[in-house]
Image (cartoon, rainbow, N blue to C red; front, side, top):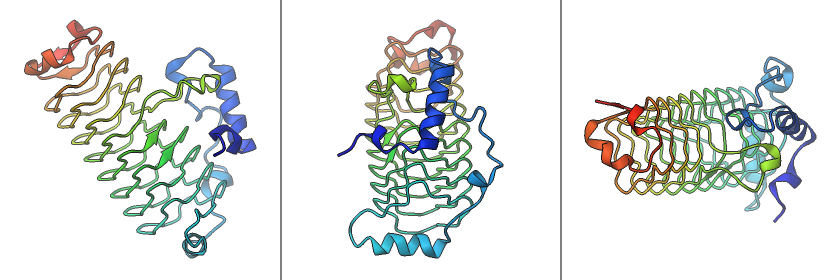
Length: 268
């Protein structure tokens, strides 16, 4: 199998190189590829395929993964389609509707899916590497077993499933900056992260009230200002996680053993 970097399009590569070159040491901004990118241009607003053409391409693959890499699919309604295993690498899918779609095993690496709707979609074991999914909607979506280093800043992910998913920092791609899941200010109310790896993820100001974090690792995560009230924390690893100003139930304090700045968390 080829490495992820060998599939990188010239456009995606240029953006990643630019981000890494300008911000080589800024961990919190290593994935900020929104800078200097105009999302109002045709590349990020138009579509070069119709829903019918996307569906036909997926069916024509006859068991082999359909290749829609680099396509502009912005704004299309692809809700409910069977797109399992499809290669969407570096596709533009801003504001695309994929509610209830089947995307198990799909390749969504380096995808632009800003404000896209994945509500209730199945993305089991999908790949979301260096994907831009800010303000997207994943309510009730299933990302169990997925490999994720996407930027979900401000995304709505209520009751989404991340069981055994790997959202941790990718230490093999440091030349591109620190690639990890960014869930900054995301709404993760009631989300299921049981057994998930969230090491070094950005959870600043995320809403995790009522979430299931049993057997999950949040080692070295940035969780300042996050809301953990009512979350299930059985055997959760918070070693060296920064919980400055995080909100937690007073009864949960023991579960945060090993966390940094626990004295500065807000216990209610």
